[in-house]
Image 1 (cartoon, protein in one colour):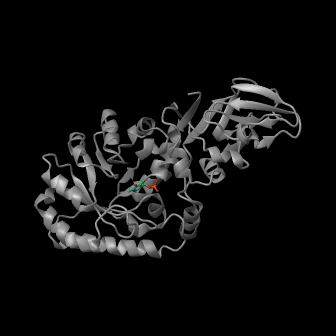
Image 2 (image 1 turned 30 degrees about the horizontal axis):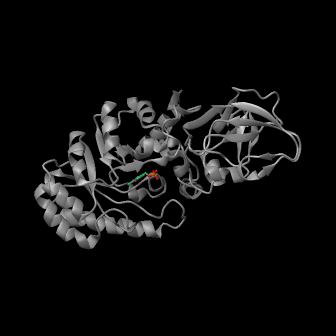
Image 3 (image 1 turned 90 degrees about the vertical axis):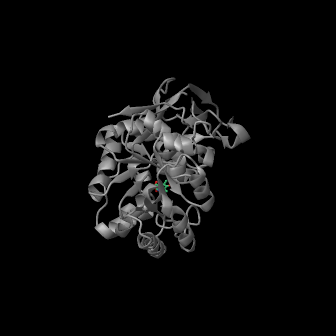
Length: 373
Ligand SMILES: *Cc1c(COP(=O)(O)O)cnc(C)c1O
């Protein structure tokens, strides 16, 4: 791979401490699924090594194994689905699982290997979890294994992009009813959690006993609307700092004469004599192909260089006509700062009609991730 990511240790730690201080004494559960939102699971865990974390959240049981291989001895919650033949793996790696439906409950009861579980409540997302009306049956079936039930959780479906949080309020009401049903059935106090980054930031009552913080650990507001909401409540914002930069080098410099076309589909025609550079990153590496059709750019020598023509599988062409003496090997910034200019992951998400969550989590895992101060 001819590009690399730089992961800022100080940014990851600063973002983590913002939440740690905001929530103390409640614990923060950093969510490091999807290769730590593309930042590199190993690198992000290494950045947080000295922070004394109690929890990590992942999507796959295999990610719990990776955390154990890195020496993490705290609690790991697997938030994603799993199949019954994985229960042994989960148990071996001391992973805690969400229990989300009756088929999973039957497999868990039948299995010799019973990892700890958190009951997942579907309070309105209609993804994972039990409905309130299913709880009497669930409670009866799970009661004999009470000592293995550690938590109860839900997930919000409409916080990030709205200023009106009525739907989340309704979800909290249902979630609290679920908690009461377990309490009435004589369960010990379960660890209750519901909040991800957005709700942690702007819905204080949603914090319960633990917060599952993903996107903001990496320095992003979940959405511009979340930032507006936060500002409305607190009359200030917190200093989240993006942790990731993506850089590469110019692989080739070439002159393109006026009236010649650039790239597949002839979508770009030089109107004047130009100087282009080829850079070794395309959609295979995770740079969205459709970003090439917007007014997207990269940075060279602290200046914006438009992407021209269609983005290819492993390459793209950029306009360096205005750069003084561009050369093979010259540094190119796809995401991050160069001089006074900065490209954010949100910029690229906007150019490619998606969200920063998708863009960063799809940066190819084989690209080296280097930790920088
Ligand atoms: C991914 C995820 C989170 C983190 O969400 P962010 O918006 O990235 O903070 C929290 N909880 C669950 C269940 C998730 O799947």
